[in-house]
Image 1 (cartoon, rainbow, N blue to C red):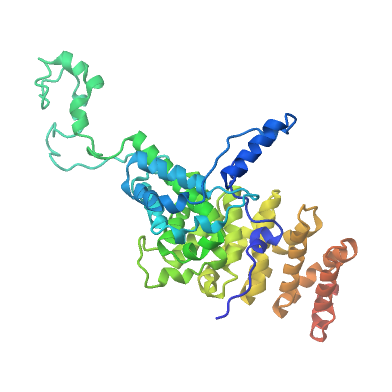
Image 2: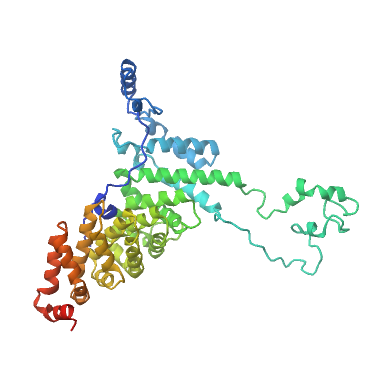
Length: 464
């Protein structure tokens, strides 16, 4: 099936805003030592140089650095050693930063030039996911059946319940009467309790867990930065392990690290124009057993999130996915839930939330008839579209897209009878708003001027 044409920059928040700005490198970084020397000489010769040109560190990365150290970077990520991981993540973070005026070519940092780099970065995230705990983790009590009829089983901290005057001996401590002073210091030493910890001897402590989390966040940030480079999009969009890891992070947005979720969302939004959800049903090796239905459920879950950056990214992602006709069978079962949430987002005072919702609804209404029928029957949908059109919006194209959504709804004969109730509101916008007057003229023509609409027009005007 031929895929619909879609411009990546046009899908962002209704097509009016530019792609998300990537985190850039500090000012003063360049491509050659000659350029850096010339800039330093110019600054030394001219004492009246702008202060902003002299602030911040100057970072110089040689063009051949990646080629010379690509194997070392991958091996450092795979080693699992803290020092090696730190060096590799810092190096890749530096290499993936790029300012708009940076003359470096994206191909210098393409994943195709570093074999195994993407899998090594994903392994860092997977290592954290294996030991990740919920933010508000509470260890649930375990039911112990061993020695249920005995006063003391020897497991856990039962000896503390008996008190320091108990005559029941504890392994390694002797009787309580003879070693009462020793029992009073148990809370400080707790050496015997250390052997009975349920977590075991080789699990990470809180500090080690936090360091693993920082490494996972840094790896996700590097993957996010690489997703802005065109040479990497094709590799990442069809890399099943990459997509499964990203969607799993999005799926666990309630308990996962906030920055990790944000990086995952931004990455998948960048890859969405080329994303085909059928990849989860292919014969490629699966690491997490992610399915297309589960991936869509993860996006819809984030769409319900109260975090503005997250539900805006989810709305933009859904609007881009529906462009690909191969994704329609996976998205259509969730249309009622998606429409309801997008209509709710249009009622928020935040302009970017309104823009994301209108952009997604525009794509849904343009590509599928069922979406048009269900959206017209969604409560408050028409009223909130009119509110967006009438209200002052910093992005004028959003108002025009909202009007075009109404025009798409009118194109379905089943919707015309219901939309006639808004005829007066449409006429008011026609004469008061020059931006959308042409669109509303076509809407009113569709509603009242067609031969098969005479009876419907009478019902709408006279209430027959």
